[in-house]
Image (cartoon, rainbow, N blue to C red; front, side, top):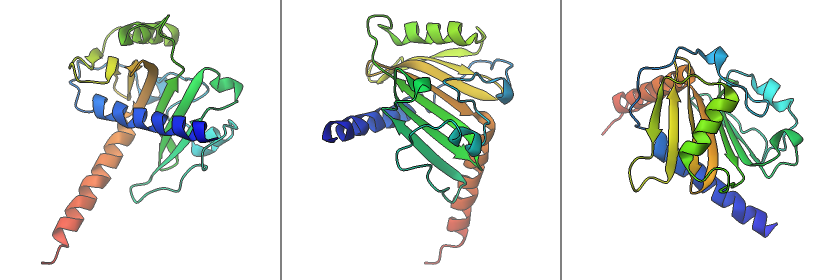
Length: 197
């Protein structure tokens, strides 16, 4: 059990490092796909309700957490025995107003078939039949832990690559990102306006 907890910590560090790598990347002209055209991966699709996700029977770590003040709540699966997650180390999900808005999947290391992030990204493009336009390199900086490619569409973004040799796939709903960003900005403004010296 101690070993599993240690691996769980490493997985969560990977997820944090992934987020730090992809934010702020420049985007080319987006592809035309909307949110409802985002691919389904391991039975998960952006826009699903929390009830639909829970019906998958995944073994959540600590359950699906209660929403924060911005309407966001998260759920994590580690080392699942579910057949839908064979070959997957971890799944991290985020819901906004009970709608699945972010999917992060970390796969088992397979350096022999995916030696680079670009190789993995190309496989994702082919397997999920994604468009060829709208992609940009990720992790071109020498210090970046994530190396791969990011697809920017009208309704969602998808990033595929290697994070410290681990294949990762990450999808975000553009709409729900904007909703949360607006709520964060409004909350910040309210706290500034209500501040009393």
